[in-house]
Every structure is written in C-alpha cells, then in structure tokens.
Length: 174
Image 1 (cartoon, rainbow, N blue to C red):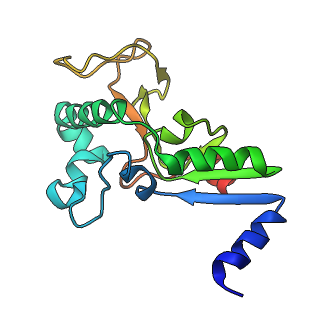
Image 2: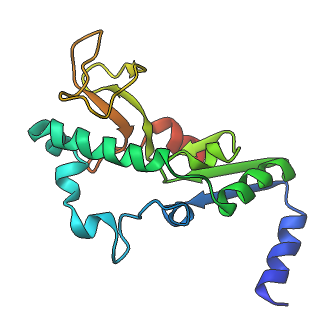
Image 3: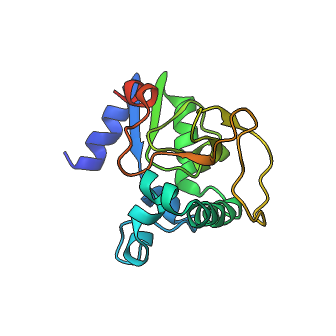
C-alpha cells in the first residue's frame, strides 16, 4: 500500500487530527520565511530584532521592523493551504491546528481555535505590565507607543529569542 493511500484511509477514519504548521505554509502568500537560504535571518541579525536585549537596546529599530512586517502581512491573503486546513476543521470531529506562524493567515482563512505557539504579530502588549494594547498604531509614529496604564513600552505579542513559549499555548498543543 502506498503512503498517500494509507494516509487517506487513516484520515477517513480519524476522529482527532492535529496539524502543525510553520513558515512554509505562508510562503505561498508572499511572506518570507526566516531560515530559508534567502530568508530574513540570512540578511538580518535576529538578536537585534527579535530579543528582549535588542528591544531594550534599540526599541525604535525593533518597533519599525515589526511595523514593516505588519504592513507586509496586511497586504497578504491566505493561500489554498490555509483554506484547506480551515475546511479540515469542519470535517473532523476534533481538529487541532497548531502553528509557529505569527501572521494570523490561518484565522483569515476561517480556521478557529488556532494554537499560536509563537504568539502573533498583530496584537500588542505592554512590555512592563503585560496588559493588552488595543489602540490603533500608525506606521508613521516617530516613537514607540506607551502603555496607558503604566507608561511602559509596547511590544508585539510574539515570542522572542530567549523567551519561553506561552504556557497556555504549549499546554494546548501538548
């Protein structure tokens, strides 16, 4: 029995399916991956742009980079892979979509209850008190936004190098 026939038979009888996605699923939508030969980390230093130390040392540069990434994502659309996974959630009695992606394209395609292991680039929170920051953010702002509760710097809700994965997401994925 060949592999694809075996997989189709197993899926046809499955009650619970879990899928783990990474950067490759969004590449077709025009979002550059991080580690491919022409990926973002081949041209940029991840420690400067995706770490607490980088943020504390140069928050304006880090903020500007994330705003640029948000602008790119806002112009991207889900691709057939995203839509296929959204359809899977309607077929199987229990379907878990676990992603390392931060772009929210799975949700844009109609997937619900997506487990975001690395957070997401769309939402923001205060670096100091952790409260969500839901204000509109202009990509033309000269300064990084400040928390209205404590005055702390606002950061994207992504997992940076050196940070732990969100406990809730990790537990759900497990």
